[in-house]
Image 1 (cartoon, protein in one colour):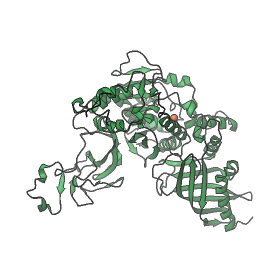
Image 2: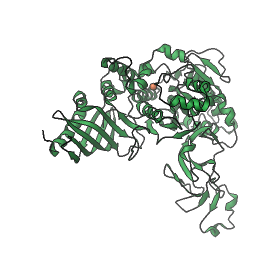
Image 3: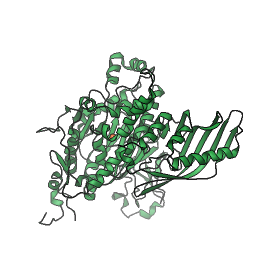
Image 4: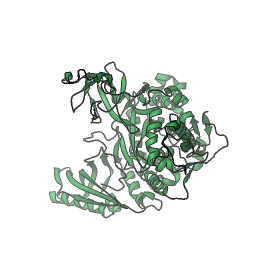
Amino acid sequence: MSHYADNPDAIRALVQDKQVHRDVYTSPEIFRLEMKHIFANSWVFVGHESQTPNKGDYFATSIGDQPVIQVRHTNGDINVLLNRCPHKGTKIVIDRQGNTGKFFRCPYHAWSFKTDGCLLAIPLKKGYEGTGLEETQNGKGMKAVGAVQNYRGFIFARLADEGISFEEFFGESLSSFDNMVDRSPAGKLEIMGPPLRYMHKCNWKMLVENQTDTCHPMVAHESSAGTAVKLYEELGLPADAPKPPAMEIIAPFMSPYEMFEDMGIRTWPNGHGHTGVHHSIHSNYSAIPGYFEAMCETYGEEKAKQILGENRHNTVYFPNVMIKGPIQTLRLFIPLAADKTLVESYIYRLVDAPDELTARTAMYNRMINAPTSIVGHDDLEMYERAQEGLAVDGLEWVNIQRLYEDDEDFDTEAVENGTTERQMRNQFHAWVKFMTMDMDPKAAPAREAAE
Amino acid sequence: MTVTKDDLIDFIYEEVRMLDEGRYDEWLALWLPDGHYWMPLDYKQTDPLNVTSLMYEDIFMLKLRVERLNGARTFSQKPKSRCHHVIQRPFVDEMNAEAGTFVTTTFMHYVETRLDEQQLLALTARHEISLVDGKLRIANKRVDIVNCDAAFGNIQLLP
Ligand SMILES: [Fe+2]
């Protein structure tokens, strides 16, 4: 029977100051409620505008468990529609992407819809005359999401019709998107190829938390980063010889604790935060000829230096996206079940920057984020072991108290030691907020007195 | 040495046997120093550099990959994975005896297993082979997985 539905007190009881109950990772009921509350009330990443550059271009994806279509409308705007025919439920778009022309046409009975969702035509329409179809929700057309925002090319949507505004939801955290886009001399990014798709048998939040977990790289990734350092030393190359790319990208994972402590972590309201306030594993990449000059041309030297001097490591946007500004990567943690998550890792090209930068970004993506990655292998192993280990009864809480301080206020921005778990606590603070904001205790099913 | 079609076919068979038996030092010794192992992410992908691949690895990376498998703290290899190739007779697509360069295409099924899980991948391997100092060596290898765009869990050994 249902325990958590419309029971905000029970939800709040899962998250304490320094620990969270395992049900947040393992309960199928909690998972369903996350889809209904968190993914409906937050602003969730959909796609990049360059995936649908021309009128009629579409891209099929999902927001939580809701199938959606990002489509370029006839007026040039990007709309986000729920991917089902209002007639019988058939998914309108079956392939991942394509061009639909001026309208969508359901493959089942040929109902057609404009690219803003409005019903265009129904074959043999006289069969509906006098039946009142036009007064029904189904007769209006394809359902659109509650709200859409294009932020510098990145498309976000809120499923709920009413709710928090885009600006309030993200606030100052958008500075990480700004830095990623500003790194293009044209101020513009463009998608490069399909994403890596990596299946994880664990809860989606484990992946999100890992993005700001700075105490694991030197441990979990010793087998890859540590071995890289060892192999490189065995080569005995002169110090000024160009390093193998693996060294530049993988070896920094082996940096000592002090490096991660000093890099800093910043948290913002609504569950967003990032590692690498002062420097990061991306700080010491070799310079690409011609790039700085192109940046100076656009921004002037001072501003160019400021943009390139910002080397944020991972910026996490609640609920389920992470970006790496310095290498133009976006990872989406798509929840499929309480114990199943699909990770899609996208890369973008800096328009008007040298191709070598794109090549480095693509290299990072395959070395670190692929199902074939020797770094990814050990991460996945940790998540899946955690998912299995959480079955242990009698020890039902997960610890998140590293560098905890009394009276932490997650509604204000803060910068802390880079190994704090404050960002994990920040995410759970937001988790409770968005989980309970539209719960209705009066609608709660009757509960047994024993509970 | 004159390279025959059979020499090339035997070479491919021996290579997969090394991989299945975990004889990685011998396998690495087959490679020319500037070779790349490429596993595209997209069907009929043409660019290994500016879009993502599953793998595009030079010898340093391949060495690292192989060395890691035996590390004391390689957690995803406790217990170890095992693999198994079933290959069709390789097609010899190009034979340039004068230059000592050859190209083969081989269709195969690849099974990788660990713990209670086993996955099957169907793939096409394209080998560029060179004759150097009387020995056949791998100049480049491209592995196209037939469902390359599917979502995978870990693929830890070498298809
Ligand atoms: Fe990791």
